[in-house]
Image (tube, rainbow, N blue to C red; front, side, top):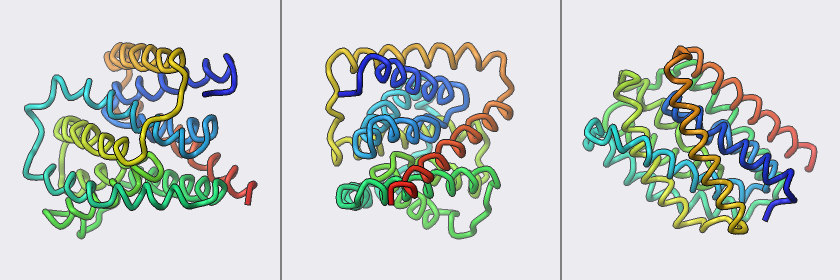
Length: 243
């Protein structure tokens, strides 16, 4: 449950914003939504709701792009993620909330900064790189709800174009979020809140598609990363305040 109608409206707005940026840029739902959901619902509920919503929005995006998925790259990524998702869930379940908030804030902020820089890491190339990125992404996704940046860094080092990255990232999002939901369970929300979340997800998808025809992709990605960095730093600050 959330904390009343105002919190429910805020929850819907967060999900709609995350869905719109995901549809607009092919990435960003978790980066934008997780810090806000964690602050609104708490770390455990915020992460699992983000896992559910990100999995759905990735599945919707994959409908048109599944033919572009690269199995040779995705198989080691998702298998490695499957191995580390339980470890992420175990870790998150045992940390005090302030420590978990600090960890989430650090992970989100560091991931955003690495993606902004387009970091080149030789270890993130080839099959070995896919395994490393998948393992890191699985752990981060189940513990903090943000597994996408690891795949983004792998794509940068593999030399993928945006056109190549989007369907593969969506495939990864479907599979890894399914693993994470299986490990963490689903959030305890009232049926009306679930309906609100579904409506917000649909509305955000429509808005993102409409904006995609008007907003340059580079500018949209910069906005997503700026919002994500602000959210990560806010989460970090709240965690430090609670220590």
